[in-house]
Image: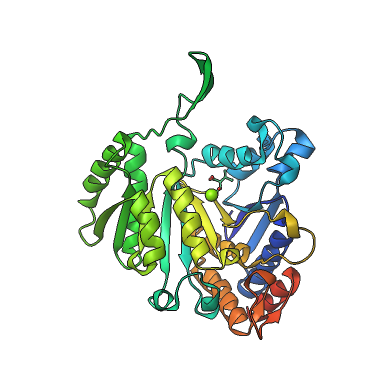
Length: 360
Ligand code: IPM
Ligand code: MG
């Protein structure tokens, strides 16, 4: 779309609809302030899609997403669909759309907002060194998608298996994303693998070293995944960008985001070779507080900022405006329940949205 953007919006399940509602108000404000036009179309995924169509990712949704410049997602899943056939669980929708859109690179920033320091789970002397890192997780390969996979009977008992498999080109393209990201930050890249045990990791390391030749300005290090998990709590300040395969990245990105104490604050981007990318908060659908106007909409609002920054070359100012408004809102003391502290102004989802709009 010229002079604007077509966005496929997927509210999903649980708190999805409430947080997306605030994100859409932010987009309206961007239009008001900058004149940028957004065409919004809503689509179904996850539990909501299962209830309406019987599958977690209707073809209609993929079609709409592919015809858009970007996809904005709330969250999917919930206890209601926990016991259904694994082949159509809500999570299948998420994995399916990642594959269908070719979203091989998942960018998950984990940083400590100075205003939320006290929420951090780590010791003050560790917090004082700061946390500002980015996990670049490979998203369409490895054990999540590798074949053969399944559960079958061998020698009279069941065996279950998956295959952590990577082709060179898959490693090369995610390594490039890691190096490029590091180049725009503090120029340090840590590649995480398990090369002391896994063959697939040995190839991973070889290819990363090859790609490093094109990035002499970026300082590259390698770390085994068990050590990385430990170092993340021992001294997260040592990390700038971490690049790793799908399953390791799933685990490490949860760890990195939770130590900040404000998982309700963190956005993420999933990108392919070209648009549309998919943008979503890191947190889940929080069914326990759904429909009560208690959810923190800030991670979704910050996902909108990422969406504008990564889906267009010309919307940096709009993204800055949103991020600064969030920062200001925190500085003013507005807090939802998840980041509540003594002396803060406890607000609900909608009132938090109001505060961000006022600060834009
Ligand atoms: C994530 C989630 C998903 C994943 C699940 C819901 C399929 O944990 O986005 O990190 O494992 O990738
Ligand atoms: Mg995860």
